[in-house]
Length: 403
Ligand SMILES: [Zn+2]
Image (cartoon, rainbow, N blue to C red; front, side, top):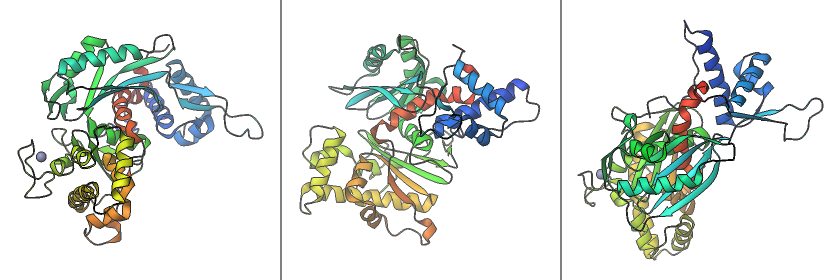
């Protein structure tokens, strides 16, 4: 994701043509209802500073392109004329895919951010690239929105690894064993859909920034604990910081101990070698990896100070605390969002306990960020992958043909 792709700033430049201005106005209205939910026409008029008839024309055009729906107000009927609400239309969708070592998740996500349909394919073993493409092709065939009047703008894939978004290549997904794989082209060949790929943690950041706990200005740090390791992302004033090669925010490779395990990156004692879901699962004697089972097992283990599970949770908390201390000292964030099983760990032990493991950070009340779990549960990465697909249409709604 290029820097700024999640910014909703609309700037009208000098020399813009009437078409440019109209596209920017369409984009502004669509982003408002996409990001902030349903608006009445008068809310849109106020928020955009455009006049009523212009807003009416924009809403009509977006509706013809299947991007917004206009309904009679569903809220309490006020005195006088009911004001219809304009909302992002779930008739326009994206197919979102997230491969992990233990499962492949596929979902149909509406333009409102709602997950309309979801399938989880359990892997017997880590799939090869071509097995993955075949599975995605089969699962998306079952999801093609035939007959429902829905359109799918493409497929977005959240990859646990390094990617080159420009040509849809997975550079390295170490836990999946994929390297230099042209996944985007392969999925397009198999399904006919346009495909966008992104790093999974960046997808998480985009989803949180658009719909979840990461909304608003300032510095927001995101840390996701997935089956294959820990990813992260940095958002500053609604802009994802991608870095020169797109690899900024790889907090999983923050060194947390000099005597830890060897990491696939070549270093020793990285956050993701010490704080690992599989080490927790094994301490809790869990074979099943359903998120709810892990949560319940952690809650039970935490009650018994001498249990193997509790000791492993404390060991992971101590390493997580070291990493967060560095991250907080470097970025001085407003908010730190934990996703995946790290959100569950936070839910079980509580913010106060986690702060105890992080302390001390640099002094000053303003250096104390909020520590919160993801607001979007485990659909986070799928919603973010769908956002990759929606981004061009949000930028320029005229890319979506009138229906
Ligand atoms: Zn490492």
